[in-house]
Amino acid sequence: MADKPTLNRLFNHVHKELCTKLELARETLDHPTSKGTKSEDLWIELFRNYLPKRYDVHRAFVIDSKDVLSDQMDIVVHDRQFSPFVLNLNGEYFVPAESVYAVLEVRQTMNASNVEYAGQKIASVRKLHRTSLPIRHAGGEYPAKPPPHILGGLVTLDNEWNPPFGDSFHEAIAKVGGEGRLDIGCAAKHGGFEVKYTPNEPPAIAAERSKAALALFLLRFIARLQGMATVPCIDVLAYAANLQSEQ
Image 1 (cartoon, rainbow, N blue to C red):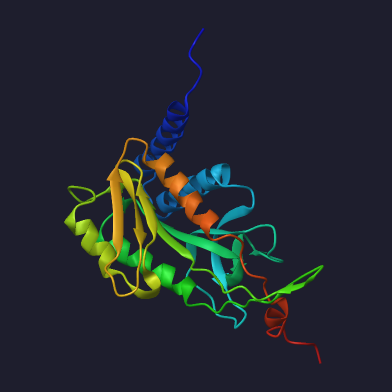
Image 2 (cartoon, rainbow, N blue to C red):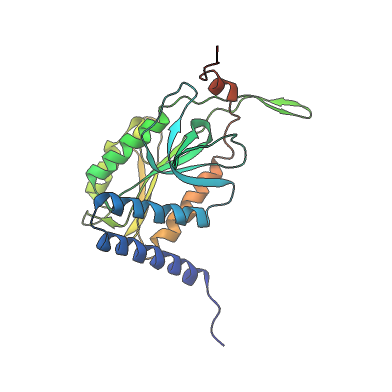
């Protein structure tokens, strides 16, 4: 009787399947927009298949109660249980800022320009205003929860640096600061990285090459999401204030 699949074999299968699909999309689609959209769709499918069902994943704009809109984000990981609305206008999704756990940029390869570009797009989300209300319960109410740090990341198929996570990579990550800083990422054919930030200290960048890069990235990404607990209670009336009443 054949050996039962081990965890390593299962994750390797997931890794090889996505890498094959991403390479096929890159090699067979000539139009850059079509190639990019297909790659985004494949990453979104991966997250939807393997993230816990409390999360949802869309290509989306993020909007706040002051009617400010982010750049369109390739991947928005957002709450699906407690957030009251996600708007769909002709296939374009609009997610309230309070419901967002993470945003990620999808590119074909990891390099300095794509790291910088990802940081700019991530910053467009983190700059948005987020409300938070006290949470009422049978014994009273919990105070309003401060909105958590929104995770930002970059996912690619390739990595242009040689070595993939050498000095040039570290310099590019460290250069993107403030609201655009990257927390996590993956170059599927090479490995992944995770960054921890401490005030007044240089970023602590942990990167490693791996044949199971996607598996390690997914597990670390889920662990970071778990550490965020639940999104704050959204003030829906703050959004309602932007709607004009009929006279």
